Image (cartoon, rainbow, N blue to C red):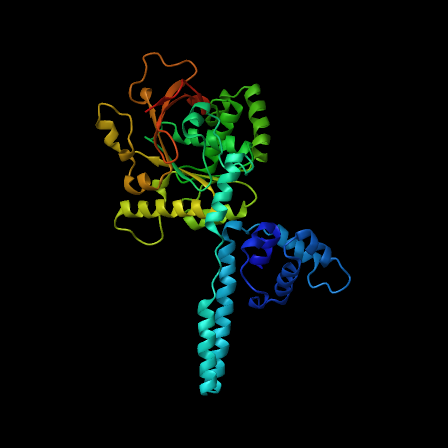
Length: 413
């Protein structure tokens, strides 16, 4: 079912289809594959028209609609779906010849058994021509004919440095507690959701309600502290919040506050959003755990980091993981963070495509006269950028309303 549904939802996958119709046990799927092969393509409209035909209809129109509506299909897992069908077919064929030989252990049947096992061992899912497809993709990028492959942030200065985020990337935002990394991630997440992405915000540190309050504070520009004491809210505040609730409800922005989130669960979430670019924020990575016991916490974080990297690559998602910095930064005279300040840093440094570290001077040296609007200058230090430059981007952070804006120009190095 998964293979046929994939071919209907993503007809271009027919070029990667490697199975024969006899490998399918279900007669309906077998006939669908035969029909696709006869047509030389997997066109859902043609199959639906065939389903509505009064003569020789092998699939119902209801079934076609169900296949098209199946939301657990991911085009990035198509080869896995094919592999599952192939393995079931090979297992069935091996069992048949073994049963036949056990019933009649003749020399001829032994030869037949060996031949079938040899044939089954030679069956595999053909891989697409990676070099050709890659070259075509590069050509589409340089001619401007390809799909958007870079997703800009709302910060022009940051875009000048990193250009934007790309599918299949694992990125990191590191900072000390309460330095603004969660607000920074929320701001970017709202921007991506507004621009057509499916955003999932995984919060391991706090509840969905508190994250939602931050979101509404940012959208409505109402100070966050007012959400904790309704006596401070004006009628205008209430109107603004109510209006933004409606806007936020329509956004494809989901908050998950499951403390036991796993990489597999994130994979399932991504699979349900296969018609949009997935952007996943994790707040924060050092709170994730793996099944089983790890004596070495550093090794566990390295494994989690590697699994997230593989997940991004296999699904095409953009994963942005927040990370805590160690206390070691507090004991240096220059407290600007470095990649080595990331807790359990080894795997994170290696796997991150873009690593950004936030520094707020007033975090360590509060001004004698606080800014009347609660504005702080944030240095976003791009410490690693696999595909571009590194440097420092200056942002203005208005903590009361949880909003970030472009600050001064960038400083590259």
